[in-house]
Amino acid sequence: MTITVNCKGLYTPGGDEDRDIAYLDVEYNDNVYDWLIYVPQGVNISEYIEESKPRIQAEIDRKELEWENLNPKTRVIVNTFDPEGNTVVEITKDEIVKPDYPDYYAKRRAEYPSYLIYIDGVVKNDDEQIQSYIDACVAVKNKYPKPQ
Image 1 (cartoon, rainbow, N blue to C red):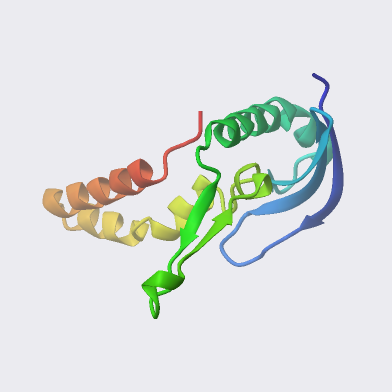
Image 2: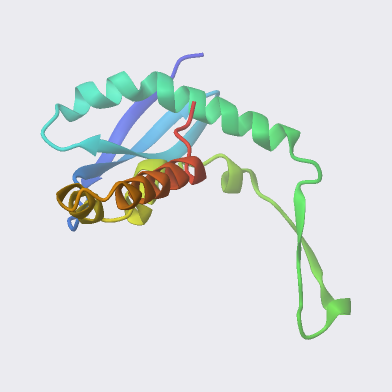
């Protein structure tokens, strides 16, 4: 299947984020998806988007399969005031087949401990503090694994 990706716009979040967000129209499998990807600042955006096509295609394929295998395609909205009033609603395809935002990279960065803890441990020659920092980083990586 052919995939066509068109950039609709670019956003620079600022703050600690060192990447831009590219908003995309992705034409694939006779569908058009609203998508986004993070783009490192200072790169050629067109080239980066072109290089990202296989990853975007694989992500859409994985999420389409997840959608197809979802059974039932409903969820229960619990009414805490009246348990008899719970509502069953349909899970729409666009709730599953969408880009991950924020991505694992941003989630990790938000939860990593400060590198100053590590530096402090090195300066103090405190192996326990250094290992604690490393363990905390590994826990965050395990919580938000890199997509395959």
